Length: 289
Image 1 (cartoon, rainbow, N blue to C red):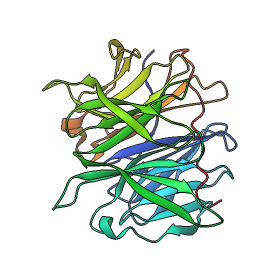
Image 2 (image 1 turned 45 degrees about the horizontal axis):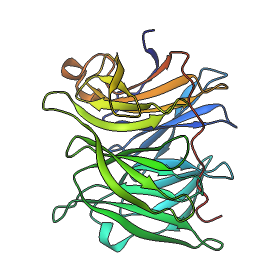
Image 3 (image 1 turned 120 degrees about the horizontal axis):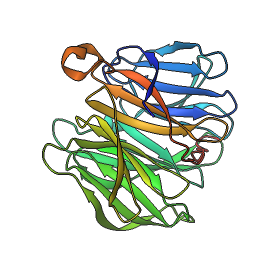
C-alpha cells in the first residue's frame, strides 16, 4: 500500500506524531518553526493549533491534555490553546531544547535534549510528584542526538535511538523504579543508509524506525534483523505512531519541506499508512497530576 498524503504544511522538521484516542485526532509538530498541527479523522480537516516557542516532543497526559517538551527544558501542559507551566526551565538546558520523548507504563517521561555548543545531549527522566511537583534526573549523557524510544510488549526492555551514532540501543527496564541498565547495540546503521530517527513498537513487538535521509520506514524484528521497509516520497522520514480505532493506521511525519526540489515531493508532509499490522496505545504521562 502506498503512503496516503494527509496534510502538507511543508514542515521544515515535521515530527512527533501523537494519536489522541478521545479526540480521534493526530497532533504533530514543525519543531524549528514552533508550530503544532491537528488532523481530525472524522471530519478530515486539519489545522495549525499552536505557534510559539519550539516544541521538541509531546506526550498524552492521563487527563487528556498534551504535555509539551520545549526549549530551555520547559515542560507545559496544553489543551485547546490553554497552557500551564510544569517546569519553567532546566538551568543546564537553557541553550538548547528537548527532542523526542516517551511516557512509560507508570506515567514517567523519558525526554532527550539536543547538544549545546559545549557538550553533547542528555536523556532525562521526569517522575510524577505530589500535586504540581515533579522530579527530573539525568539518565544518560554524551548523546549525539537523542531520539526515538519504545518498550517491549512485556515491559521488561526499552529501546533508545541515538541518531548521532546511527544506533538503536536496547536496555533492560524496571517498571517499578523506572531504571534502565545493561545498554547494548541492537541496530547499527551504515554510512549512506540514512539515520535512525523516531520510532514505535507494534503489537507483535517489532520496531518501526523512521529513517532520516533514508526515505523510508524500516521494520525490525526484536532481534534487530530488518523485516521490511516502506519507501516515502521524502528523504527525511522522521517519526511514526499507530492510531485509529483498531490501531492499524500509521501516521508518519517527514521533514525538508522548505526544499522539496531536493528533499522530495512529500517532504514536510504528514502521511497515513495501513498495512493491517496492529499497534498499541502509547502510555500516558502523569506529570503534575
